[in-house]
Length: 182
Image 1 (cartoon, rainbow, N blue to C red):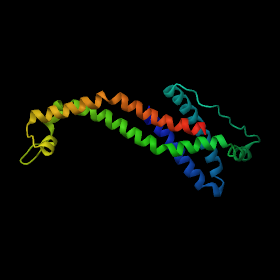
Image 2: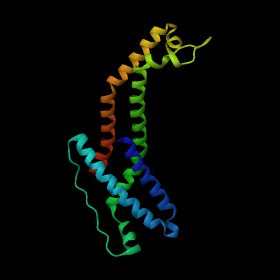
Image 3: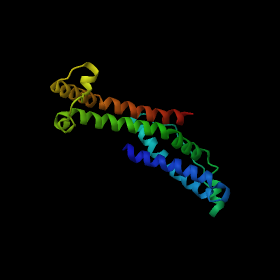
Image 4: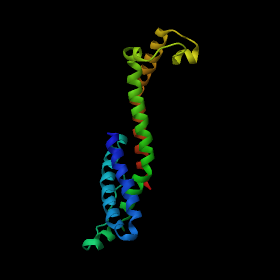
């Protein structure tokens, strides 16, 4: 579900920013360690998603175990390069996820709304000089043509919804797969 994934990425971005910002007063060490732990969990979910979408397993990954106790253990956990790669991916992939989510929601809801235009277009305000999209674009003032146009646009959006969502998923998983192979 894209909205849950966006929330997870927002945690990574906010945790990283708060951790780096408070590193001077040592509060940043546990914040960054917690954010790295969350990024590990997100990376595990993402690896499973990439495997499911592409059908190919990603190369193995290895995490270092931090020894010690307390603040020293947290500080040592910050030295794990794989955790930093996971966190960096979460932060850098965030804009791609936001754009993908926006396109997916707009395409889905727009398609449904346009396909059902017949049932709600009556509620649009009509008056002197109000023109429809079809009237403005093609100089066709017919109400029936306006309804047919919007319904056709909705049907096209709904028919292309699956390939668009598949393409968005491949674009997002492709970014993770490329990052994992490097």
